[in-house]
Image 1 (cartoon, one colour):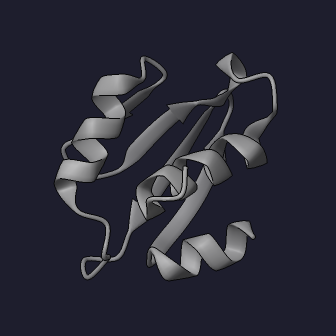
Image 2 (image 1 turned 90 degrees about the vertical axis):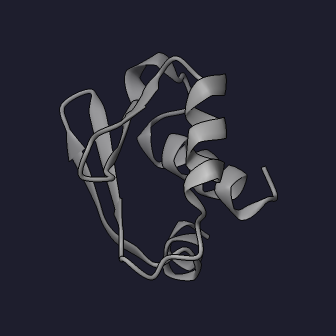
Length: 80
């Protein structure tokens, strides 16, 4: 499911760096900037850097890193 969601959203990469995960999208992603802004404002464990990379602090989420990324992609897809 994670791979399918990433492909649908045109995710360029998902990288784990310690307690954080970076999600980068291709330039032609269907994810709208206002969707990201709305999600980030609702959560304290995320930030968007100037390059457009979404950073998630996954250690704050008890379900683990894969589920944390899956939940974010589902929310941006409109199903979360």
